[in-house]
Image 1 (cartoon, helix red, strand yellow):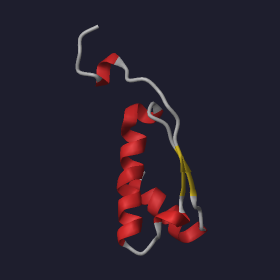
Image 2 (cartoon, one colour; image 1 turned 90 degrees about the horizontal axis):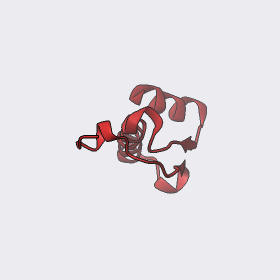
Image 3 (tube, helix red, strand yellow; image 1 turned 90 degrees about the vertical axis):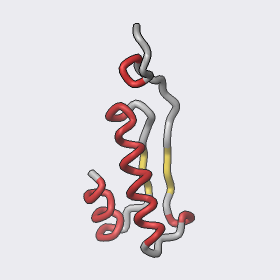
Image 4 (cartoon, helix red, strand yellow; image 1 turned 30 degrees about the vertical axis):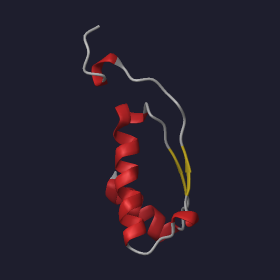
Length: 67
């Protein structure tokens, strides 16, 4: 997913990324965060990218507590 984000932004001029806490059990936001770091380190300005996120809930599985 990381490489797909980088390639899509660089090759196709995509500048809107939509994510949410519960997409792929937080993996989506973590990968997008890493991709954004990479893009910014390689010349993109944060102001060039529009990031949309939504609230969500943590499932018991990812809160390290017993149900």
